[in-house]
Image (tube, rainbow, N blue to C red; front, side, top):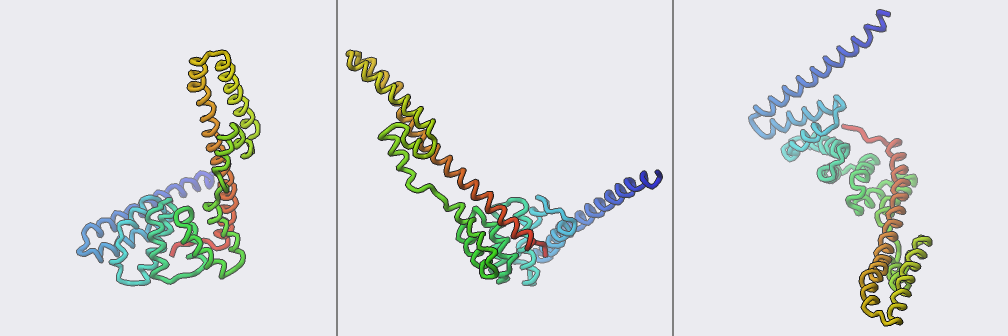
Length: 270
């Protein structure tokens, strides 16, 4: 019983001591950064601070803020500069930063000439949804390693997917209300739209035949136009929704493919 009680206490004390030591090191480095005699020295301590975050598996916004403070042009050692760019790109990605992450990975690849599987996978992950050209280039490099990466072609296909000749649905609904909606696969909504517009049109016709011209004009303006234009707007909306659903399905499949690749070739800090 005594052992059961002591274990949680020891773990709690260890965690608290570790956190205090971590915080103390951060403060010490921040003090050195503040009192640095030059940008070069300041940059060195900022890198040490970033490494401390990575060592303690703290990849949050504080780590990203530290990375953003570092002017990598001031890093004299090229190997250290390249190492920083990789770690900064990975931290920016983990924080969903779509501004710094592409910047860091671009300069990492440019300065390091690293064409490894991990480097290209990180480029794909970061540029996914941002730059289809860079994604395509990275996928081609990955394909040169193995055909297992052929499936990653779906990433660009996902963003490039468009329903062909979308305007034909709108034109069809303009000619025959509801027809474009039915052609899009929404038969019930299409028939409803046709019935409402047709009934309104027939009502306007009966009014005109019975010399109720003012009522006919008023009904055509207030109700007829609403149903007719509404049917066209609904057609556009449903076509776009269908397109987005297809993209979502493709995105889900691509994400699974990319996750499998990342499981096999994990991205680690340097």
